[in-house]
Amino acid sequence: MLIDGASARDRMRLKADICIIGAGVAGITLANELKAHSLKVVVLESGGDSYDEKIQELNEAEKADGLHPDPLYSRLRVLGGTSNHWLNNAIPFSKIDFEKRAWIENSGWPISYGDVEKYYPKAGEYCGVDADGYDPEYWLKRLGLESPFSRSGIIQTKIAKAARPPTRFFQKYGPDLERSDRIDIYKHASLVDVVFDKKTKQIREASFTSDGKIVHSIVADTFILCMGGIENARMLLHFNMKYENALGNQHDNVGRYFMDHPTVRPASVFTTSPELAKDRSASLGERNIGLNFEYSEGTLRDHKITNAKLFFFNSNNYDLSDGISSFHILKDNLIKGELPDDAFTHLSNLIFDIDMVAEAISRKSFNKRIFPHAEDLAGFGVHVMMEQTPSRNNRVKLGQAKDRLGLRKVLIDWTLEQRDIDMMWSGLLLLGKEFGLHSLGRLRLLKEQSERMFADQMGFGHHHMGTTRMAADERTGVVDRNQLVFGTANLYVAGSSVFTTGSHVPPTLTIVALSLRLADHLAMKRAKR
Image (cartoon, rainbow, N blue to C red):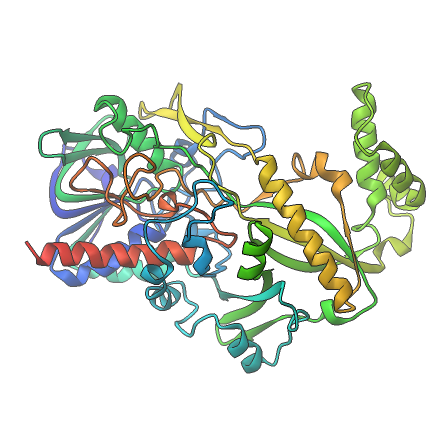
């Protein structure tokens, strides 16, 4: 049943076996799985059926780091959550992502790849991309596609799947949940507080509201936070202010190890080879199967680097102009009375690319294009989605400003550490050698553009991960291997906030797989009672 919390005129007091807080990908998956186990499940969702600016404002940060964007619009408060605007790129993590890597501080999950791998086929069905796996050899043969790096031991193919149209989780699974007599979904129901019994370590009840005026409560045996990578941490920080850091924050870990996937264009490929220009995707029914590239596991180990999602896109003379970027870097530094690093390189780029610099000035100042050859194909840009290493200093914390429900907004303190940037360049050097070895062209690293590349030109996957990380014990994390919050007996967390490391691919498939695993754990635990 779907119930509008905003329509309640009197204070409600609900009861359930399991209370799921958040109706996004994790929450919907859990509710759908648990409905078959004769459990009374209540789902609380802050948003409604469609986008509401007033509700969306609850996501606003008091302050986000100058580089990391405010989560105001990257996370949606609506039934189905952010699946309502994701691109549906469903890709599994790799085995090495779960391992302790000596060259990556704070790596190593308390579970193995095998613990998650068995849930990937069903997760694929949930995401609308089916359960037929991601084996590159199988897909290359089935679709008649070729990889330009088929003979490489450094670069390997990574299969990406996407449902077309994208799977909207509440749109797809909501109707069955609404028809279930075991599931009640309350929209316009924002969590504001919990009651925690320190002796039993139980969350006894939770409070929620629509407008901050009437506050309702729910009593349940089990509570699960499914509100997203930032909001899960934000609410735990609120609770811990009241309960002296007893809920997973015994060692100040809640909100720390915040990760995203930075995206940059750090290299250009100049080639006359048609190999990279080939379309490396194919439609298969209501799915799209595409090829990305990554470093092989042996390469990661041998060269002690992080992985990256690599893909190439057609670029014209204007797109690949080094002179345009150098012009901006020189201008910005000269305004400050300084010379940039690699000043001679920037000056050379400006001189040898003066036609494209003039083109850029004309387009910006006069909205006029002056050189037809600016649109001629010149090569390819290299797009990189980086794996970010987990740093304790990257964090979400509470500010002083409050939202309209009286809860403190978040402060986001995030940076991309130099070690991550250095490992990216090391990987690209290897990629450049592969281009030469396989006669694919010449790869040029754009290191002199780093000043802008990792500042105003840097993009993000908007994949918020790690703020309630999974760990072997409370000294290094917030939840245990079964996603139970340390120090509690019945509070769980689901979603990408529990990721110990974030890999280099979109997180949704793994969010679903971990949610399926959690549903099995809860059902088994219930059966033993």
